Length: 106
Length: 500
Ligand code: SF4
Figure 1 (cartoon, each protein chain N blue to C red):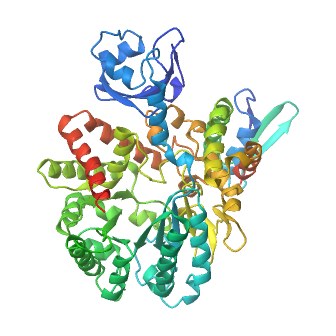
Figure 2 (tube, protein in one colour):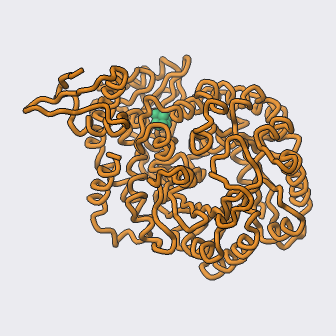
Figure 3 (spheres, rainbow over the protein chains, first blue to last red):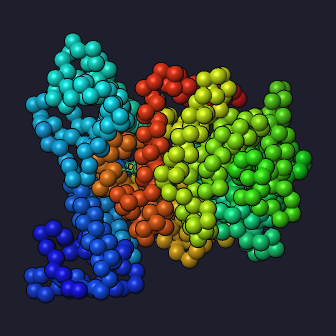
């Protein structure tokens, strides 16, 4: 099965994250051809679960972008308070974002 | 008026009214004929449909009967006391302003029990290489005292921690020394099956003000079936020491030290579900005033044997509601018994205070609220993370006590990952959920359930359980007789705390 994906609905990043969560046995291929994205798999149920998760991840990513300021504020405050040296913290959010992305893809 | 995320259900919605109107951002949920409405400050009101519609339509006038209640709780935009509301938020989220207060020392992985749900990765009695050394314990305690908080709790766990008694004894004495040197206060707790307890140990623990907690899953037959003690009767061991320690607690007047009332933890399995009444009665028989009806977490051994011992959220919630109503009915007759989970949630809801429950925070307590030190010095964000590590997934391991400073621990990628993953503002369901001000998600359980620390609350059983428990509480909070019981629980706690 080879299905074209509407890029306006699913961000490529959301598809990648969904694959890392759902597809432990590597049964799904995300294929990019020019401007289009295709999902290729023989497992129909897995495909449906994957598309659900992709939608969830897409919503989550756009929500994270929208609420980023408050997320950054709370997380930075919590970590800086735990360290107890709030004024010494240098731009913790940049580190946080990079790390989160990397770990998210496990 | 803009209603967000209609697609995800009408029952549970956040609203951003147009600016010229009078309602600030609120979240709501309809339960029966009532609407629960909350805001970011952690304030709530439970109102009928007509009032709710008026609130949404900005038709609440200043001479309206409901106006003072809504205004004083931050639901009327041009009449908000920000000083009061901000202090409410700060109290409710006080953990955001301090370091980890809970420090769990896994003194050994050895255990002499074979509980059917054991989540802690325990080893048999001979595996002495699974004991924490004194050097590791000392370093762990030093780290705990570096935490940016004045009151720390050090909890000794296992396996069965009494199997490593010498290190435990030294650790308790060392904590007392550290208290004096640092000026910080340490609450020391031991979680034990009590099978190796004797009068000498009990005396030492009482004299050093260690609070003692055991596991009790109900009446004798049920407890012994779930908590298997190959060399004896696990119920008799727990019950006899609970009685002994309660007697000591009751007759402590004139002591130079405070003896704490012993407490017990229940683990609810499939086997337990029909016995909601009998379990509560058993706690009453042993003069225990608190019962903690915790759902089983699908972690470690429990996950592997889920088909045998697990249940779904509906099954758990039916059990919880029946047990909760039974507990309330006893309280109405003047018998004091509290349900711990509800008590902690009510503290958030009614008093806007943080009950110190690290599992239900935003961000969650991983690393910034608690740290778990394994027998070999490995540090984890939490005990759940340690159990997942025991199965081979070291996602929640921060490092080793020998290689890290306190600052390294908190500043680690692992702690940041958990803090970000558990922020409810990036959760599709939570950010608009009426219970968001009081709730929290668990990256460790998410990982076990869905292989992602972020999780997906649309399908999460943990979310369904918490939403159900909140519903059960809010269905009763508007009833005067129930509210009186809840208030009694919250004030009772204060009385015993100030007892010392
Ligand atoms: S986890 Fe809590 S805040 Fe999030 S949707 Fe579930 S009940 Fe609501």
